[in-house]
Image (cartoon, rainbow, N blue to C red):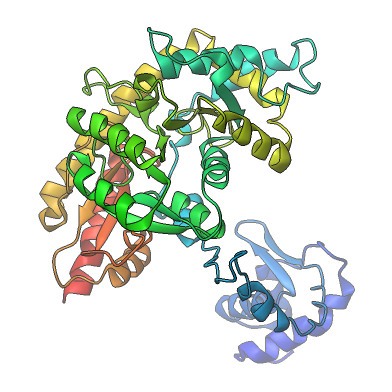
Length: 483
């Protein structure tokens, strides 16, 4: 044919020739197309790109172009507008409307993997290089050989696993018994069960401000009203907690006494006693989300015991999990409680999910009972401190305006308050354009936040080099939104 410089003309010719090829069959090479149609390599490349955009071909670098599968036509959608009214017309027995929304945006910010090449400062789990993958694989193999490993477990969980969690929660004094423990499908499931058990739809539930977005999402999805109680460097303000109980009539407070998410605060000793006293006087429960105990850094020193260990009266419903320190897919956790509430918790869990799959429970038992487990905990403690210090150093060197609110000795993130006048939303968007994903602060507040914030995770990246590069990209994004 005559020389053609038109990409559109060549794309049209190639489009017509596609019927000669079966699905997945390779098209002629770019060199062959150049010679056949007497066009430039650039024209061939652009024509193939046009067909790829139409979904007609698939291009694979270094391999060539292939005919794609025909796109399946999407079925016609009906009229679903009626659902807007149905989903919003929920009322309590009293006839009062019950606020119930399901907003997973704050959770998805830490669950969704960013595109390739983007530094993951928004992650909620350990990087694969920090996870005990070999130990998990060995534990899974051993668990699969246990007698009855694929059978039906007790609804409350395997007794050996309940005993292990009871020792972890109750400490040397043995203040928590195996009979006080239920095995759950991770911490999120445990929080959901606890909130459903303790508060009816429409009720207020007191929460730290700021706090974990996953808990706020669960509360709202259950028709509850999260009421913020301000916290500072020593944890929740107990004077304001008492006032909030009186003002709202709430019967539940959800707190994270150790390495609070997102501030990293540890509840001060005096406030630990006050939280229990205030809740007891209000006739209320404390849901203790002890998510970070196994994420203490190696410079943390002795940790305070869980609130549940110092609570003989059943005020505390304790939540903990192996997921954060092991693997996102090892969704094994525990609920611990005393008194009649335990039976309600058990009943709700059975109705919702029957039981936690036995192979997962057996794997968890094999893991925590192996010599690899304490080695893994020590390794994580050392690596998290190293990464914390590296991120702090890079922030001070490259972006001193973005200093953290505090420096935690546990957990896997830093909480940053943005300078006045900085748009949190604009900075998050600019950061992603610059190649770094960060968690916005807004989802951590149940009411209007006092300022813009970011949460930076240092656990989900490959190493200290990636931390430095992430801060460099964040600095560029900050400069962009401040100009």
